[in-house]
Length: 497
Image 1 (cartoon, one colour):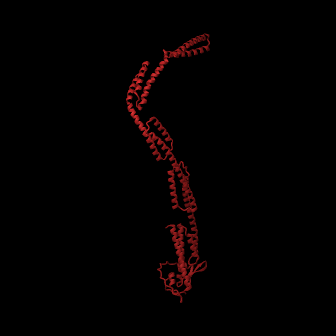
Image 2 (cartoon, rainbow, N blue to C red):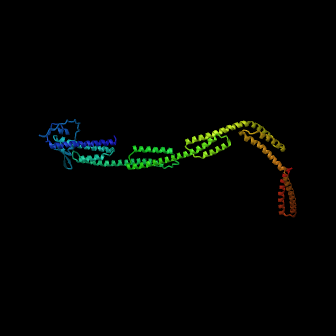
């Protein structure tokens, strides 16, 4: 059973008890005012009267007859401890019952037409109903049930005990009620503490949702991962709705403040997202327009047969394409495919033309391969004049052979150029050897150096004869240097011979 169900059951019990007290007490007053006392019948069995019993009793002479009410089927009534009840009350022969409290007697009501024991038992049973309600409330406090209706129940119990409509240990019952009030207040304090703790947890969870939403909304729109952040913001919104639906209430003011912050964060995030994608759309449109222009130029060149010019233009268009801003992935891929298709069309046409030319120049390659072999046979050059004459003949036939396929052009031209370079180097070396001016300069330098060496030898001999060590050393050093120069010049002269 939940706390709420226990509270409802207790409230119902106390309400029924109050109704029972009201129903029983009212007929007693009415009978006391309008009906004379009837003698007790010793032979009648002891029982508790009901309002129907009072209604069925005969009225005073001259009073209108009352319509008899059907007697209800009464449940078995538990016996009352009359000995205990007699400690706190008494009954007169006429059915009046009194409560003994602090040495004083207080009338609680009358049970006419019944024995003293029955009258006392009736009002003692009403007290037992009150103590039963007290016991039930004590059990609920012990079980730490919800205290929502407990203060009202305590007030009702105090009211019943203060009305003096029952017989029993009223002071003891009031002491139990006082103890219950202390227990209820302690239980209420525990409930408040537990409620505040749960509220703090709920508030922290709700604050965490709001704080994360504000953090997501505060990210830089230029670097934010919109797909990830949008999904996270949706998750936070679902978490907020779940907390609103199932979580503890935080109070109207607090919840409105948190919702205002959360809504503001979502609004800022949505505004940044719309602005970002709006700008992205504008950038995409500009990029598409720029690349559409490049595609138009590429498609116009696709049918050109001016192979060199068109290939250069395609290189320029490619550089512009790389420098252009990117559109969206889908658009950019489609634009690139169109641009690439125009290039492929041109280069495939050029490759077809080159293939035709290569096929036509294949025979020329065979001729030049033979001429290259003939030219390479001139190396190493032994007879310069003969080699120059033969190479000139080969060169004339080389030029007459025509072009070769592009794939072989660099290879065969480089090989032939190597033979030409060797012949040129040999010709330059021969010229250097036979140059008259160079011969004259070498002969003059040789004569001057020989004269200088002869003079230095005379100076060395004089210094040695004079015993001048300083002059000997100086003349020896100069003589050694001149002799080394003389050796090198003689070698150069031999090259001209």
